[in-house]
Each structure stands twice: as C-alpha cells, then as structure tokens.
Length: 294
Image (cartoon, rainbow, N blue to C red; front, side, top):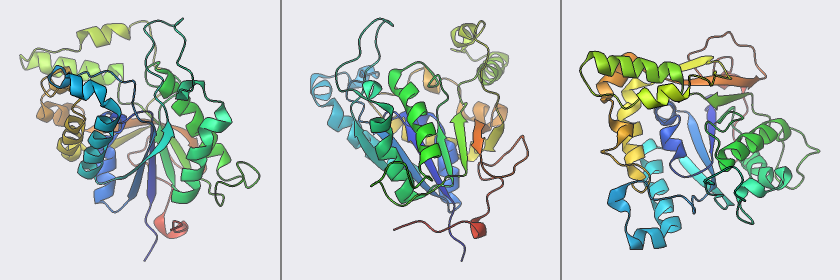
C-alpha cells in the first residue's frame, strides 16, 4: 500500500483551525489523508466573544477552557492536534500599545520557529497551510504564524539548520488561507439579499474598498458537504463563537450553493502543478512520497 498523504495546518490560536480551512481538513481526513493541526499559542489572552459564555468562572480559567474546546473541535474534525507552547500576545487596542513580555509575537524568529520545525520533521507533511503575511488580519500572533510557517517550510529540509529537532524533511507545497475575501463576501451578500435574507456583510465589504487583495486565489477546494462538520467544530469553541451571531447568519445551504469551496493561494511549490487547482495535493502522488516517521 502507498503511504498516506499528510497535511499540516499551522494556526495561531485554538478556534482558528475551525474558522479557516476546517471543511478542507474534514474532507481530506475522510479521504484517508493524515492531518495535523499545530496551534502555536493557547489563546490565553483571548476575550470571551460569546456573551452566553461571559461568566466569571470561564474568564478566570480561560486557558483551560480553550484547551478543552480545542480538544472537542479536534474530535469533530477528526484531525490530530498539538500545542507548540507559546503564550498568546493578545490583540492591542491600538498600534502603539506594547505587547506583553514573553508573548509569541515578541519571540525571536529562530526561537519561535524551532518547535514548528521539530513538528514538521516528526510529522513529515507534504503540504502546509497557514496565513498570508498580513496574518489574514493584523493580529501579531497571526503575522508571526506566517513568519514561522515560511521559516519551517524553508528550513526543515536543511540538515544544517535547527540541529537537534529531528531528521530533515522537506514539505512540497505551502498555501495561504484565503477564506476571507471580498469576492466571497460579495457573493454571499448578493445571494442573501436576493433571497430576502438580511445580510451582515455590507460593512465587511466596505472595508475592502481601499484594500486590494494582495494574494490571488490559486486553489479552490470543493468541500461543501463538510460545511456542517466545520460549523460543529466552530460551535465547539463556545467562548469564541456565538451560534446566534453573524458568523452563522448566512444559511449553510446558501453557502453550499453560492460558494462551495475553501480557497487558498499557493505560496511555495517544489512540484509541478497547473493553476488554477482544485486540490492541495495536485502534483503530489502518494506512491512517490516517503512514509511518516513514527
């Protein structure tokens, strides 16, 4: 039998894996791909965004609560998951606010990247998905996640870099998540308006007017039948996601009809491929790759 394909998703906080690429991961798991989510911080400084969970006992134990939520989301998606041990930087209220000492966003690149390099060398992914260089949105942990993902992609295969973190392994493709695009929200907004459903997306679309999309979508992965699993995983992060909030305002069947894919930008590729793609593993063949280390 050929070795299974392997996908690594690199995220800043617990819940990011469920709001960015979750249906893609659910699809691949159920097709026999091994999927590992690497979560760089514990989300310790995240706010309670669901008013139903904004209770003193939750706030006082937010780190433990978010780990439990991550474990439930992991079960729902069917993926493996590991925390890489950094402390959440929090989201500054203004650009001049200093980040807290010791947080992920203030780490030296080499120190921040070493655990991810070790994870890449152990899991041996063929494909890595992460955020673009703006972090998807300008959270310091998301921006640092992009930096360490690129560093790990480029360094993990070099035996002279990061000694002591395992045997070298070179991933073959690196993708940026492109789920929050103006094009997608415009399509959903128009579909909801045409159906007489109130749309919450007008303000989102307006924010993009003077912000051109930096990275083109190169890869659209069909995964509409896994949107329900995605939603279940999101709801598992109960401190972060209000099931009655705007995130679920667009009916799932409308999303499945209007935008049945999750979208990516191919940032690095060491294999031949033709764009556009509909599969993150285009150009990679299971019978041509090495098995994982165990």
